Image (cartoon, rainbow, N blue to C red; front, side, top):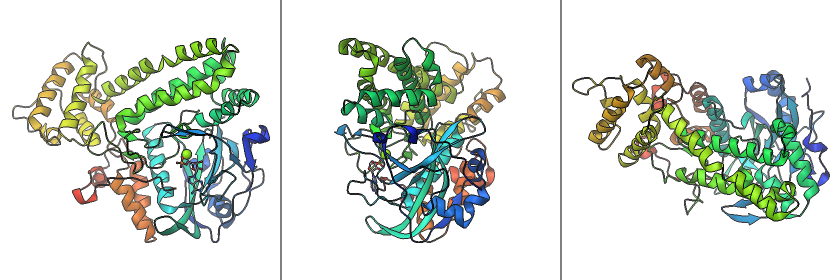
Length: 493
Ligand code: AMP
Ligand code: MG
């Protein structure tokens, strides 16, 4: 078995990356191969699970056709400019084109030092590897654009963090690993030729419709902006907080990428932050749309030399395109919220009604996921004593306020054309029952440190069907008990 590599990024000039193989590890051991994804990519899962496949996944063996590189990029980290970042602990092995014609990167994360490692050891430990595996696969099952996990292996080495932990490598699959920071890298060096090559690469790969536009690079920017606005609205619709939306962690293809301190909220609060290093709340839940816009303005700045030779004209054109972001995001977010509360028609006041629920949830400390999921089940008409509604109202510290909102909601539902059953089914298709709750992810990591992978497998199986009720797995719907609440998450770097 060979991996049918078809590499395009490695055809770009040498200043886009450094060529080097992954650093071998002491004793590769299989954690998991994602069979469905492997088959989708035309790879044989049995090969990936064989000693030879595991050696490839650990970086001990460079497969035929791979052209391993560490990609160069720059970025704004927490708003501060860093001119030189790059894959400091990752190697792009190469690309494969799936049967559906889509091109995917196969990338090893935790694969050893590179010229971009700065002071890092180039490694990852099993905690962040399993975390990214679980959360990225959950995202994919939720239907949200994301990089995915092809496999995870252990290294037989220890990685020094606060303590020494077992090392691991994640094999990650992405539409590409081009980031806003990749454009910034060349813009900062005044390398317009590289910018143009990169933009053309991205157009061919992700935005072919831009090629025939009157202004391909502005059309490219429009496309990236539209995908980002939509992506962030999708994140927020499931209570996801990325946690480290630096420009180097924003994918040009519009996928969720770099799952570090990310987390799904339990109790809803717009100011929620989990990341232990986000002291200012820059990447708090409700700040994400604004940060998306800020990152896009960085991208626009980087693209200026491609937009117009006259800088003033370029700035004006870029600003004009950037202005589309606010309305685009608002439209996507409002549409997502209205779907979550089960409204198919459009009437004045609908957005206010949905936002009022979020406000009630914040005041009433309701669990975000459970509140929306239980709302799906409520009937169009209230029963006399409100007993049916208690499953929902009891999630709020002030059930009376929640009840008042339900009365407004039902008054509005009376104007809908759908049957109750249709409305409920549509709501269940957008309001997941299962999300990767932090305490469950933590449970997976703690068990793995004791060499027990059963919780990892179980959680993955539950999260593969997030919109189904799965009565046998009802415990995975539950928010954490007070002693289980995870208050901070870490980059794991
Ligand atoms: P992240 O916060 O994971 O997006 O990483 C930011 C930058 O730091 C990227 O350039 C990473 O490649 C680099 N980096 C993170 N962890 C390590 C590590 N353990 N060793 C080397 N480089 C790292
Ligand atoms: Mg990153």
